[in-house]
Image (cartoon, rainbow, N blue to C red; front, side):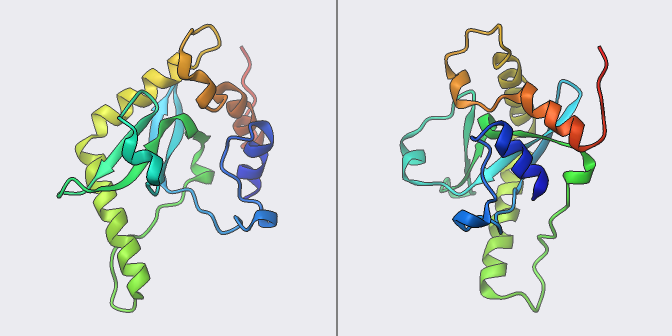
Length: 166
């Protein structure tokens, strides 16, 4: 929670985990990719009404189930740098004692993961291309929708006790 708060302070477009607005239980579930020799978590999000009208683009993908129903979205523009200390595997295996809600959520995760595995090459390539497009020298028009990846990397390095010397 502290790591996400620090990232949010550096770039307020990082999704909040603030207890003041009731977001202290928000978890970041996503896909981890490597961009510029760094791990990045691309958050999975629930689809909302505006996503139905959106087409896939450099910073966004719709996740669909086997019936082509949209079940989630990948927001590449909101990907955050992570180290192993911030990564925790999520157990999505459905167990006997799971509540109906837990079973539904786990099945949703299984379906999203299945789509991500089928599209992993596209996901990795999109993340890498977007990372490069968001370079300060780039003229990419969608850059204003993206987090400041370089700034967040400095927070990640401080948080994880790393200091890059160039």
